[in-house]
Amino acid sequence: MNSQQRIKPIIGIAFIVLVWGSVWPIYKVALEYTPPILFSAFRSLLGGVLFTLFLLPQWRKIRLKETWPIYTISTIFNVVLFFTLQTIGLQYLPSGLFAVLVYLQPVLVVLLAWIWLKEPLTVMKVVGILIGFFGVVFISSEGITGNISTIGVTLALITGISWAIGTVYIKRTSGFVDGLWLVAIQNLIGGSTMTILGLTMEDVTTIEWNVPLILCILYGAIFGVTLAFVVYYKLMRAGEAGKVSSFTFLVPLISVLIGTVFLKEPFTLSLFVGMIMILVSIYLINRKSLKPNTHTVKNNQEILKDA
Image 1 (cartoon, helix red, strand yellow):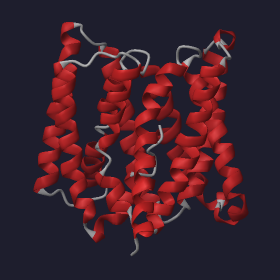
Image 2 (image 1 turned 45 degrees about the vertical axis):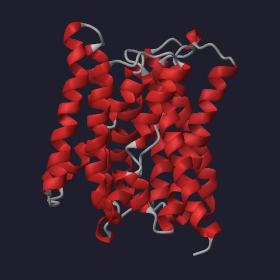
Image 3 (image 1 turned 135 degrees about the vertical axis):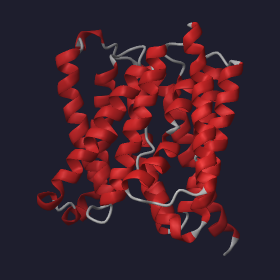
């Protein structure tokens, strides 16, 4: 392998991790100008349209008649619940803290896969689960004292749980649907559903259509929903699933750094300690993904890393 072949995967992984890490503070900015559900609807629907246009030459892979239940269930957990709870919860917590709590998801995926899919639970994974659990407890302890929003912590954890359930469901059904079309269609369906919910529950006249909001929507749709997944699947085809998974732990760290530096979000001792514990937890669990027989597991765990 020459130097150019070696550097391409590195650039691709760096791009994905930076996009996943940056969307949280960017979405936090967007919520200053728009209600949460409608914002989720806009970026998801636009991203779904762009992704569909990209995949249109492969339209025969959809097989909607046989696979519509999979698209529907995946949409509920991975788009409607995940995006809606995510954007509502970001109103109550700093973006970095919210991202750290949601990124308990890889820990929950391991636990749910053990329960639902009967996957082996190794000692390393158990240690990772315990460390991640106590990391969340440590961060959430500030909610008892009133220093952070209990509602925000609860919404972050439910967001992570919804994402974990959706991810394990995708893993279970991955042999029946095309992964790229799943992302496209669930964003189309989810974006349309959230648009109806938003128009019903929120006041559309409160939206401030300005440059920051438009840029946030475009960033979420183009980078978060479309380009990140195109790059991700190219890496998967090149056999780089393990490397992508091993760098998952950097995503909440990037979110915290961006939120602290650019949004002046507080960086407390409990956030620092809890974040380190969750990052260690994710790292311990993802170390297993470097083995060839776990590439399929990680491929499905990473399918929904938008935000």
